[in-house]
Amino acid sequence: AAWSLGVGDMDTLQAASDAAAAALQSAYTPCYRAFKAAADTRAASLAASVLAEAEKVARQSVLTLTR
Image (cartoon, rainbow, N blue to C red):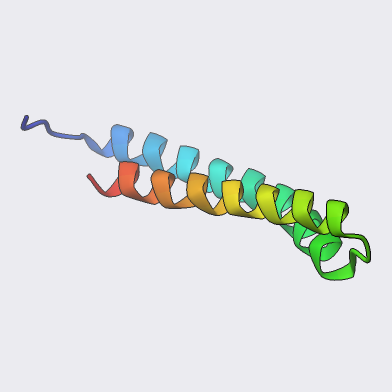
């Protein structure tokens, strides 16, 4: 389906994208640090699953914004 965006719409999309990126980064960074520092398997596994989910969300966000 074809649709068009006005300048205001693009600004809104950019603001939403920036907010999503900031939220993702704020969640991702502590999880990554926990993953790298985790000594026990359960903590490492949990941190790895959170990182994987964050990466999946990031990929979906990029795909959604580029369609």
